[in-house]
Amino acid sequence: MAFYYPDPQLESTSVRLRKWSVNDLACIEAASADPEIPQGTTVPAVYSEPEGLAFIERQLARQTSGQGLSLAIADTATDVAKGLVFLGLNRIRGHCRLGYWLIPDARGHRRGTQAVAMASRWVLTETDTHRLVAQVVPKNVASVALLRRLGFVEEGVLRSWLWIKDEAVDVIQFSLLRSDIA
Image (cartoon, rainbow, N blue to C red; front, top):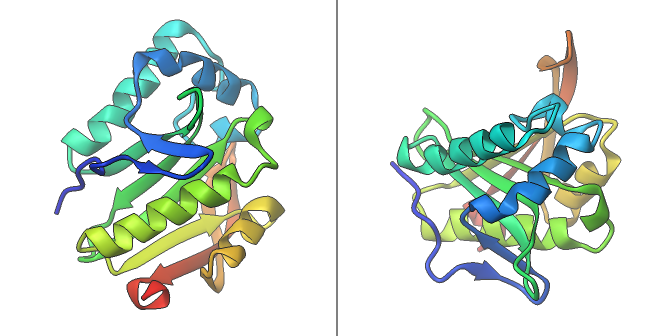
């Protein structure tokens, strides 16, 4: 199974999900400056233009290599990238992983909620995916609240699941099924 970019693009009144481009370097630079984003992602911890371009290339390669789909969360009015939604294919048929982040100046305006809602609905209704899973560090209360608001079901805590810096930390696992949005 492989994912293809949604056509037409997924769009709400304030958020568009689209393919990454070289014009999105300012978003990568802002994400690199955030103390949390680089810890659990492939965003470079120290920004440089070559590192930013390499990050964008990795995002585009996720689709072409069959790993999944990485979409820029862009402002609808300006098309300026403000974050990322990742839909990662799993070896288990019909299962998909969800990841997302927003740069600091984009938070607090429900952009993340809109982006995750659109991506979740699309992947569960327009692809062979029937189970979408998100894993969140418990201290990330904004992400926990976002997933609950969108109807994701908390399945439990995976102990020492994610490496952040040199420490294995717990994550809360959430899921959303195709039948949950029907």
